[in-house]
Length: 322
Image 1 (cartoon, helix red, strand yellow):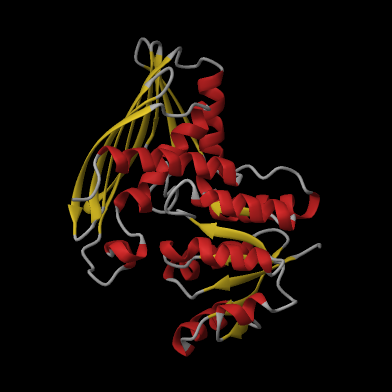
Image 2 (cartoon, rainbow, N blue to C red):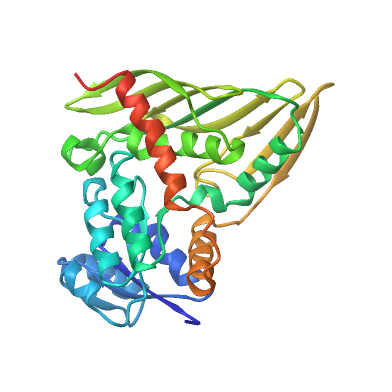
């Protein structure tokens, strides 16, 4: 399997703008096919990826013997269903986050992965970026001393009532769409799991537009604010007793700003590391392909994604929808 042949389920904007080009650019990967009932949307993909095969249904793509792996960018509430169908069809699966809407839904995905022997994972690109791998190393090496506090923020303003992120029935809301980033990246960087949660969510038509959460981890405290009704902003700060790590563009690196890590130490000393031009979507596709070919452990297994969903379940339980 020198080249992984990818099929994309659904002609989403995100697939067109980010993941399709990432698959096209990744080492050992090819955009082989698209499933879409929209001729207009399919034509855009055909222009971007000449020779792409277009299927008029998701089932038809899954039945295509020329497909090795499937990328799923469908609305959130469809992720589990089509991931299971893709695994049953013998395809490897990379599904957009959140891959499930509750932690226990991961159990069926893990069982199907193990039963089929196929690789399945959530498309959580953060763990593949060197700024996050470096952050994890610095914390483990004691660069900021003992970690005491983590704060995270991720916001953008989406007022489109027709957008799936603004619909409760499609699994919309701020926490599910972007809360996975501060929570998952904190778990990745520290290796710890939350033990309790407090929350104050703002609800609109059954979905959250703002989620303010406080999680207690075994050795530090975590505060987060995510919103789909505020000006675009993102930041992560890891505060220890001898230093501070700050990431200014931790989640949309090189889209809204440069991937940069600042290490602040006593005496106003600041050490800065930068990663210009690194595309974490491409790195994600390449890591998936490497694991698919060799069987080496994938950096973001379903068990990790289940842990992030468990933390989100805790936040929803602390302040549920009215």
